[in-house]
Every structure is written in C-alpha cells, then in structure tokens.
Length: 430
Image (cartoon, rainbow, N blue to C red):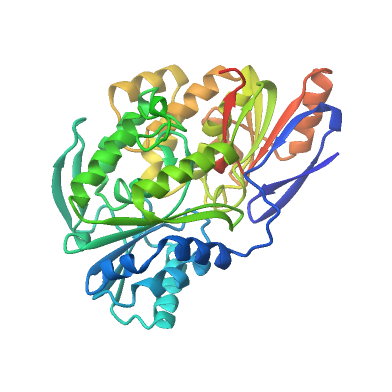
C-alpha cells in the first residue's frame, strides 16, 4: 500500500503492507465543499451583531494575529473581519510573535494581507507592527501568583477593545494554542516568556488541559493558568473578542466569533472531538508534522513528537519525516535548544531542572523521549552531523527504515501520523 505523507512543501510516499498498518491518523478532514470565506463570513454573521459594531465605534481597537509560523489562511480571514471595524477610530494590528523572529517573509505577507483588506474595507486609520520581544517598549503589569513578571507591548496600552484571531489546536505544554497565547507570550517581553515557559517542566503542563476547558477535571495546567492570569493583568477590564478557527492544510473547517472565553471553550470541545485520538501504542511509529511551515525547523517540528509520543512503546522506534529547511531554528534558540540537546542525556535532564533558560524545555522533553526509545530516525534536509550530535539517527532513505522494521518483527504493526502538529494522541484506556 502506498501512503502519501506531507513533507516540506510537498508529499512523499512510503510503501507498507496494508496488514502491517495499525492506523493512519490525520487532522480533521470533512466533506464540506464550503470555502474559507464562506465559513468565516457565516461565523461573523452568526455572532457579530450590531452590538459589536456599536462597541467598537469610535474606539481604538487592537487586532492580535498569530504569526507566520502558523499556516492560517489570513487572506480569507482578514477581509470579512476588517469590514466590521470601519467605524473604529484606530485599527492597530499586532502580529503576535512571542519570542519568534518578527522579520520573516511570512510575517511580511500577513502585513500585506492586512493592508489590502483594510483598503478594501475603506479603513485608512490602520497601523501594523510585528511584535519584537527584545526591541519593543514594554509596560509592567505586575506578577502572577507563580511569579511571572508580565511585561507587555506598550502599543496596546492605549487600546479600548481587543480582537484576537487564533487557530485553535492542541499544544504540547500550554494545553491548546488559543487566544490567551496571543497575549502571553504573544505580545510580551523575552523575560515574561522565559518565566512562563519554565513551568513547562511541570508534568501537569501538557496538552488538552486548560483553565477554559468545559471539563472541570481538565483545567489544572500550570503554564496555561499562568498565561491566563497574565492576560487578565494586561487586559484589565477592556473587552476582548475573538475569531477562533480550526483548520488543516489551510482549509478552515470550523469558526466562531464572539466573546473570547465563550468561543475559545467551544473550540476546545470541537478540537477534542475531531483532533484527539485514543490509540494502542505500537513499537514503530511514523510521524510527520504536516509539512511547511510545521516542519520549517527542528525547533518548530519537535512539538509533533510530543503530541504523538503516547503512540509508541518504551524501547520502540520513531521515523520522523521533517524537512527542516531552516535547520535547527532561529539563532536565538540555538544555545538553549540545540546546544543543550547535544549533552549526555542524563546530564542534560539534570542541568535543565536546576537551571532553566528560555527554550530549554524543548531539549528537556526531547531528551525524555530519546531516553525511553531505542531510536528516533530523522529524514530531513539537515546535515547528518547535527542530528548525530543530538542523539538522533539520520536517514537518507526512509523506505529502508520501514523495510528494516518489517523484516525485524514479523508481527509488529506501524502507526502513521501525518499532520501531527494539530493532533494529540492518548493511550487507549489511559
């Protein structure tokens, strides 16, 4: 059987006997022929009543957008959304980069989409800025109960109303990608992100758990709770609305518009139904983040391994299909992500627990997975020596890895996860 899997900007194929495939798991696919514009317009029409337009009339509004490391189809989102804001005295667009590089081609493209949509909507009072966690001006809003100092972008200090666009998916330590993350760490200083992300080492900071979850037993997540508290310190009593979407491969399957907590909670429930699965762990697992931009770098792609780790048994093997055309990741991540990953695994785990630095939650979680598996094979554009040094096993022929698995264990099946960046797997019965 030929299985097509996303890799970089295209597809690659593997041949695996049908009887040896435990399952093929992909993000939510639906049969609807509706295009993105139709889905977004309906969401806005259903919830964006005259009361919202009355709310923003004459007000200074900040539109918070996910950055270019996501694959949201902003060209289909911003037109309908900006048409609601014609009566605002100012529309300030902030691209919520967190600690990512603000100056990327993808972020430039988002700016161009926003400018075009504003022109078509007749909005002349538009400002656009990509957040820079080190160079922008910041305001101190206080500290959370866990001690995180909330330093937020001063460009939001004179704002009357917030409107957030967020594509919701499971997040491996913050519960879900969601509108709260557009505030913390989205528009916060490096120091704030570092303090908040240090909580990722806590075992309770995991996917599918968030203070806005409908299940009261699924709300205790240290990272997400800290982010929520930080958002409240930033927002104070100002209104926050959101357009939340659930998408895959740039197709929007679901969208809601309205008060932020209400629509985000709905999005969590739909994500749980459509993009989480209970699986019986196998000894051999194939994982693709879902192609570009989800496999743009090793730093970005790694989350796919965390979200699918429950599908492979201790002592098993993973074949990771991740192009990584940008290599390890941004320069600022190298020291505390990649360089720490090259240390002996035991030493790495102990050193990060005793001295956390931003980005080191990544090698910490990577090392935990490396420690319990026999091998993580990586098919990518990265040089072999970089993978070898990080305790990973480079391969230039993923089919040969699969063939070796098939020959090694006659009865062992393989699970394939494509688009793993938007999926969470739980052990069956767990």
